[in-house]
Image (cartoon, rainbow, N blue to C red; front, side):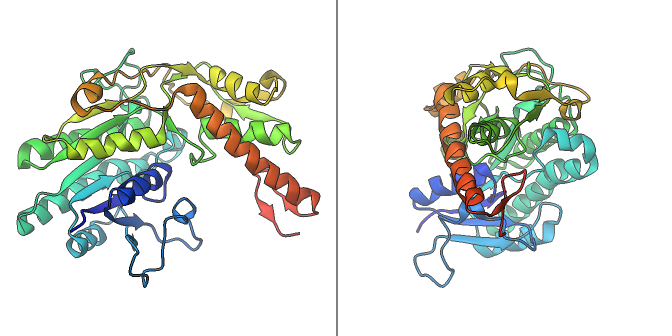
Length: 350
């Protein structure tokens, strides 16, 4: 029988790459999605099959981390071998505007899922393993390089909520013997990254500026330094954590840091553009409390799990720029044909 995986946050960047990985490994994958009036499954469309298709191995269920009943019902129905909790309000800047919602979904949502897992394992007698998506934002102002022993000092409601979720997982592991692994992932990017995140914001703008579809790019702190990993590499580490014989906590990072300015240099340089002619600083994008420098030490993941990143920074930026230049070319074709393209690059049938 194939293993059964339950993935929250399956429609996000990480959820889509993880689903690809699990399906390739022969898993039956179930995803939790929130009810919406519009389809929000674009990242999964190439994987999804009609439920009536006997070969379908991906099933989507309506549920939410803010409501435990639906999570419990799904868990009882599918009887998962592994749970990957990737769902979150994951935008750091937005967490300052919506701190209560962020805390409810990220911290309490994880606690609700842990309670569902505790109840399910108690009455089923089955060991179901759970992965919790932690974040380098938990380290905040602690000096780099950061590893599993580094003190948490989060600088945003998002970082605080992730730290609370981390300790909930440690507590349930120690108190109830649950197999719960925390992955402390540093920034991980790809062409599927949301367009409000700085990496994708840069590569989208570079392609559109190159083709005359956009004039300016507004950003915040250009000196912030981050350890950027390729998202498919990161989700492989998630899977490896649940295959290990013991639940533990692991930093997932490349060990190399780059500034936002470096990202601009590389992305615009690939298109032979001088980013200083197009970028302006907008204080709206500055955080009330900044995180200046995150650089991970993933020695433990390398030695214990045999994990190592396959894509370096230059390759990551190049893949994102190539993807977003092609997207901009499609937009230009539509615009030249008389259709309306919004400032966000959306097509409006004109």
